[in-house]
Amino acid sequence: MIWLWPSSLQLQIVLRPRFAGQSEPLLRAGAVLAGLVVGIPLLLTMLGFDAGQATMALVRGSIGSMYALTSGTLVRATPVILTGLSVAIAFRAGVFNIGAEGQLLVGAAAAAGASLLPGIRTSHASPWIALAAGGVAGGAWAGIAAFLRRRFRVLEVISTILLNFVAANLVGFLVRGALQEPLHIYPQSAAIALTARLPRILPGSRLHAGFLVALAAAGLAWWVIRYTAAGFRLRAVGANADAARIAGEINVARTTTSAFIVSGALAGLAGAIELTGVTFALYENISPGYGYTGIAVALLARLDALGVIASGLLFGALEAGASAMQRDAGVPSVVVLVVEALIILGLIVAWPLQMGAPSGNREGAVAGERRAQEEGA
Image 1 (cartoon, rainbow, N blue to C red):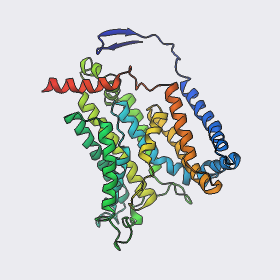
Image 2: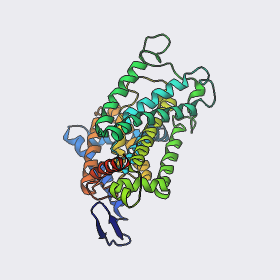
Image 3: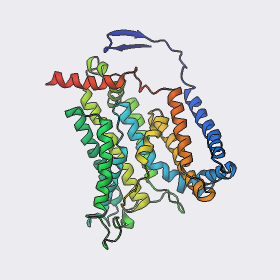
Image 4: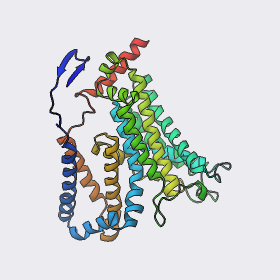
């Protein structure tokens, strides 16, 4: 295989066996399974809890019954699949969007506002209008950071983190002001109408159509990234911005901005689905950190869109099981979070993320955008 990296002005020839790396996903999956099977009971024992009782509670709460699977695991997996996909797309383009949490909150607020409009709330199209409003709002919120990055070269890591706090306070302002419930007693919006809620997929469960939307979004993203010109541009910019700009004549700034906005739209869609499919009202702390969990989901999936589905399901199961473990065995749910963090750190050390590029990708992306702006000026 031959790679040409114009940024270093060298022709590098890399020979790889045809089947090299194909066993890597199996090795990662085995490492994750081993980490969970060994790590959770070991940590519980070290903390003085009954490991057997707590582990059984975790299993029962996640996959112990059809209701636990559909109403717990799959429902919790839906938003983290979308936020994980959001982060994966941004990272693949060399954009470090840490603002999925804020974009999710803004998307939920926009969905609540749309669902409560007099002309829309009773319409059968209301849920889908709310999802569109959430996606647009999330994309626009990410667009703020994208503009700051492109125009003023503000690091998106900083701007998106700060915008998360702005979004959280914006939701707090809305549920105490324009969107507060009619009696003005509780800091939340009024409940959306039955016609504005996402339909249930299975009778007798809480699983809603948003889960199918998340699966479709992940499948579409995988196809676009792998088989379209837009996906090639995204991968090329993420791999080496200078090579994409010089050899591929790709507009680096436009590609990264587009990836940023699409990333925000997916996170906003997650917030809209959570509101129309689970909570049915907007309130503070509507998200228990789904946006931040999405970062872990994307890293565990190694930024692969289809891999995000698997890692999202895993995190959904762990979160559902952790709640049951705390409720039934009296074990703090944060124990599971500790094990998750250790597993992800171990995987990153064992298989460093490269986003399809040599090291130094971040500097290359920023430098590529800077040169493109200077040449266009």
